[in-house]
Image (cartoon, rainbow, N blue to C red; front, top):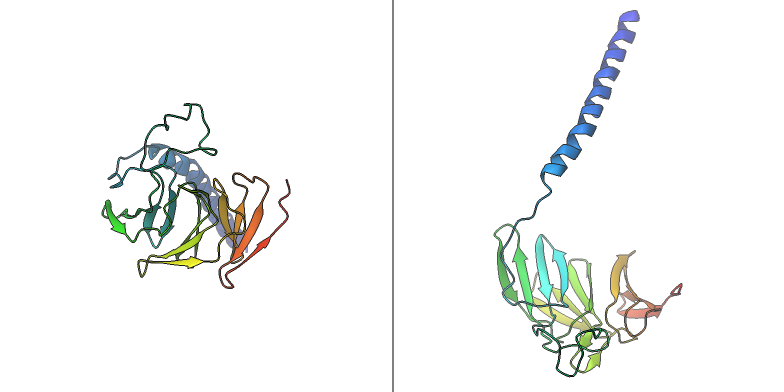
Length: 199
């Protein structure tokens, strides 16, 4: 019996020491990897674009390929109120394994500052700003088929918003010009409801 207790104590001591060593070892490994590596650039330089990851690939969608400010807009202008144009629907797929970019089917509505969310391996691009102003357009990209589908538009046109998937629904929160909204999209039913914003 005494031998059993000694064996259990020895095993417990070894496990404790292993955990202590692992605890001190992991941060050293992470600290050594604190660096940046340059990879292949997108084929079309853009700002205000949407980014999403599906099945190990990264998609860079839409945005603006213009640079600088329009002459009538002072340099201090907020892009939420005005923008510089150059809206594109460009869709590029990045493969981290091969460090290569490939053009894919363009987003039907060229725009900037829209929300992106991934649900069931499809990329939802909702809202944003087009050359005609803010929009509620809801377009869905299927990477498996490289095709786009237009769904029911978001009730309130806005840009600069965030999207998150919770319980099979996509929550579109805040944005400009209406910062207090919380509209929820149900992909299965293709319907929208408005939730309490809390603001």
